[in-house]
Amino acid sequence: MIRFVQILALILASPVAADIITPRAPGGGDVGRMARHVQAVADAGDIVRIDERCASSCTLQLLVGCVTPDARLGFHAPHVIEGPATAELWARLIAAHYPPQMAQWYLDGPAGRAWMTWIDGRQAVAMGATPC
Image 1 (cartoon, rainbow, N blue to C red):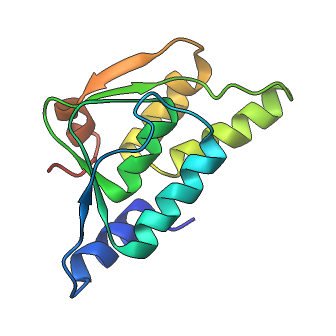
Image 2: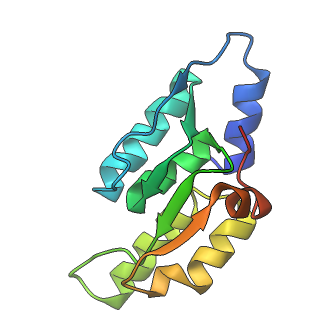
């Protein structure tokens, strides 16, 4: 998976103006499907503007997006039935969609919790998310 900075550099270097799009599935959903959506957005050179509630798998769009100060982002452990080793693999896949500081924060905290941990856009930017 292409890292956050690489995607951002590709978007910023693109000679064609990027489309600003709204987040898909703000309440979350299937991580695999969302990862494929994020790749398609990256391939198109578009940018996801996160300015409201974005929880669970929706947060993977941080890789190809920007956040406003009023955005609300929710993070939790991946829901898997295969066991702890599989949950750790999914948590690492999820974290790969975040800026490095946010990825470490996620792996050290919300990735191990079943309940939602909420942050606002200001906190996300402080952890390396791209501001809008």
